[in-house]
Length: 128
Image 1 (spheres, rainbow, N blue to C red):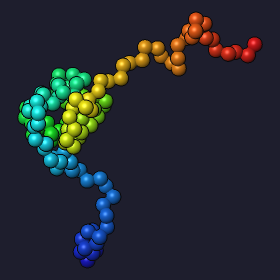
Image 2 (cartoon, helix red, strand yellow; image 1 turned 90 degrees about the vertical axis):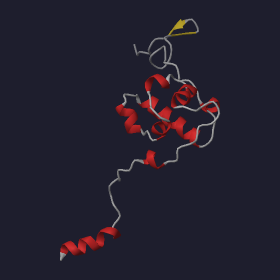
Image 3 (tube, rainbow, N blue to C red; image 1 turned 90 degrees about the horizontal axis):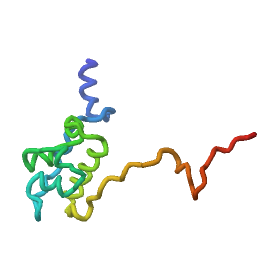
Image 4 (tube, one colour; image 1 turned 45 degrees about the vertical axis):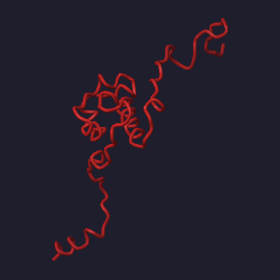
């Protein structure tokens, strides 16, 4: 009796767990446009040497790729986020020449600023 009751109440109670759905497969695959006709052309257009980090075999395979598959391919977090962001911009109809940008250069000096400012070496203020 309790099994029947639970079966009837299950659709009424919302699921408290995240469903495992491959959302990249549900999004539409944009048609190739302009000079971008292959996955390699798209990855070269967005820059950051993405074509050397990822090598999909077909146009559909590129657009059905999600973050988990990029992680399994060995891409870092910033590379994964940039590629997925670029793919969404291309889906929305924007040209990669307009939205692609280079990565921020690494900091040369660690800490909160240079040790020498205006020709004077900065020291910590100590109570003497």
